[in-house]
Image (cartoon, rainbow, N blue to C red; front, side, top):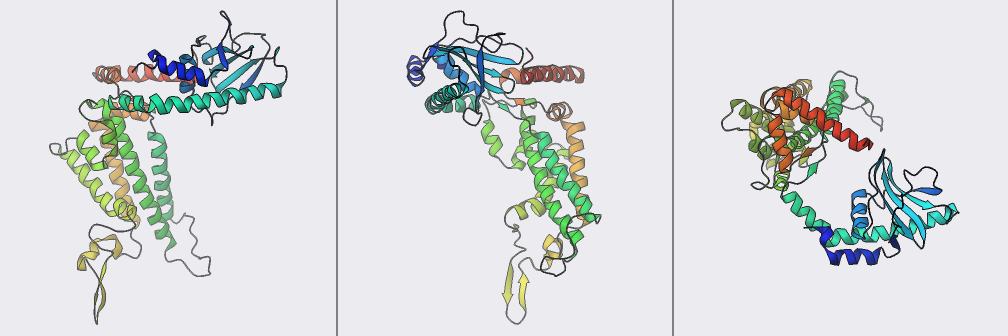
Length: 386
């Protein structure tokens, strides 16, 4: 789909943006023109959150990009009712420039900003509805997409609750023995440790699922054979099995089984309202005896057997299991791919990136240089240091 060859779309955008006319030939714009009198106005990012879509609209109505410069990604010059203006994407967002020799008042310039923003909002909505949603779905289906790397954000959440559990079990938590109603809390140290351990487990599985998605382009993934959106929607276990050979690799099988046990005991139980698959929260009634657990004496092996379901030893075992799995990922099965993930760089799924990554993975040295080069390009784009 070539949006810029769609004459019907161009005409539609021109109607919506009819107040904006191309600038006179040779107009240098304002952003990088020293001494040209102008008002410089901030465009509200809540109203136009994606500069790239604004750029598409400006291209569709026939405006010409004036090019990149220091801290400037692009600038388009135009006229509104005979007043020279330009819209620029700069390091800290979109800026509208207005010729102050024609519109001298700041208030009048702000009114023009509101007018232009409204037109761009309307064009943005129409473009998304008519073209971009279908186009985006097709690009995603073909693997031509980027996924933001949130590895460190998710790991920090996990580490936050891990530290909270550790402090709580050491008697340095924030739960007081006294309750607000004047009563006493039973074993606040273990209770707070339990709360944090459950949150820690949930955070780790969130981190794990995100990591598995980020590892895909480094594992021979081909979007023509397996849809990325389907993979993302699968449970953690299915993701794990598709990346690692659980059926043939004893270490993968051992780590999978460990994760499964932890998930069943902590994540799934407390992620589904406190109910587990075994029915240990069910109590059946027997006249003359009372209520008995549905799992009978097997209750002793369930977390509900204890007044506080998790103790310091349980926490330590879970933490050590997660540490071991992290080490396995970093050193054994995906050392180079994990280098990329832990670098914080976004991950791409298109054929070009997958080919480049495959070549770079021929040696650790090549891969280090690949990361260094991509980091340089990312920093250059983020800082607009062209």
